[in-house]
Length: 237
Image (cartoon, rainbow, N blue to C red; front, side, top):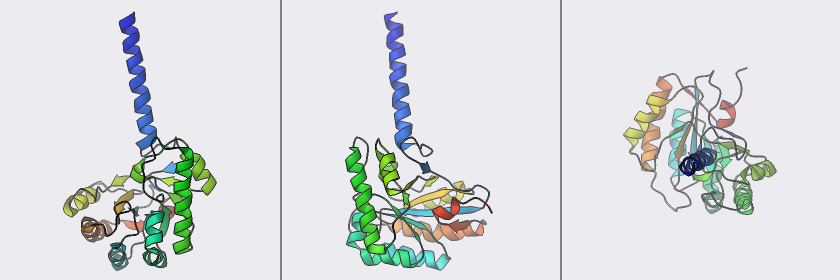
C-alpha cells in the first residue's frame, strides 16, 4: 500500500508540474491571462512580429520591410523605447503595429503581481511617450506567463500574444531560420523574430536581417500575404 501511495503521489506531482509548465510556457495557454497564438486560418496571411526592440539595428529592418511592402508588429521593451525614441517613432511612422514587451525584459516566473504590473505599466508609459501610441497587445518576455499577469493585462487593456512559429534567430543562422519558416508556415501563423536582444545596446541581429531578406520574398512567392497581429486576428469578412 505504501509503495502504491508513493507512486500515486509521484504521478500527481509530475502531473501538476506538467500542468504548471503548460500554463507558463504553452503557446496555446490562456490560463494566466487572455492570449492568442495564431490568427484567422481562412486567409493565406501571416503576421510577422519582432521582439526586444527598438535597437540600433531596427532602421535596417524597417528598410527591408518597406522594400517588400510588409506591415509587421513590433513588441517593444519600454526601456529601449525610452533610450531610442527616434527609432521607436520611426517604427510607428512606417505604419507598423506596436506592442508591449515589458519594460526591462525579465522572466516573470516567481515574480510578484506588483512587479509584473509595474513592468507592463512602465512599458506602456515609455512606449506611449516615445510614439504617442498606447499598445493594445502584449508579449511576455521568453513567453513566460505567471500569476498576476492576467490582472495586469486587464488593468492595462492588453491582449496577450504568443506565436505559432519561433524563428530562434538569436541562435540559428539565417539559412536555417529561412528554411524552417518557409517549410512550416501555414495560413494564420504568427511568426516571432527579434530586432533586439533584451535591453542590450547595439545588439547583433544580422541573422535576423538576412533571414528576413531571404524569407519574406519566398513566402510572398508562395502566395502568403503579411498582416499585423490585429489584422490577422480579424474574421474573414
